[in-house]
Image 1 (cartoon, helix red, strand yellow):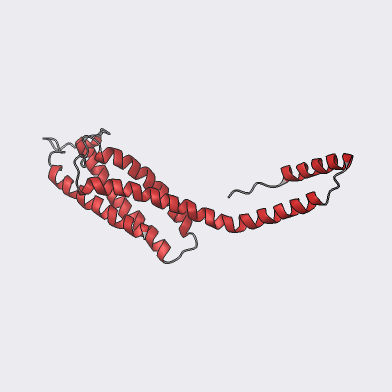
Image 2: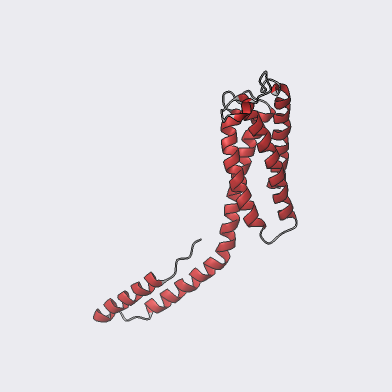
Length: 185
């Protein structure tokens, strides 16, 4: 549902940016036909083109991701994680350039709200991916840890508690503890 929402939000960005571009496109061409977009300046023209590109790229990538989730492809979570990372970076930069002073969405409107909503939604999608990765790893990781803890407690309780035996038992327990492989949750 979040990815389909991203498709809609990116369509709004693309449509609003297209409207802005149609309004200022003639101004962005010089008298002799040279384009002011050739230089990497954070001008209104460049920012408008960026918002068009971000909207178009967002529509395509979020639609592809929605399709991978819908068909339940086995690598859908990896695709979602990769796309969410792209979206977070693209819309964090986009929120600053598109809605900042001199940008096409410097005044409140559809493009302004859609850009910030896309940024917020991309953060939610990223958090959802992280949560899904944790849930997948918790199933196998917790079983391993529970069996290790059970074995440790059983072996620790079977040691004698008198004098020299306690020292060697604690050293043996510490050695086993340090040799246990690390399991990331």
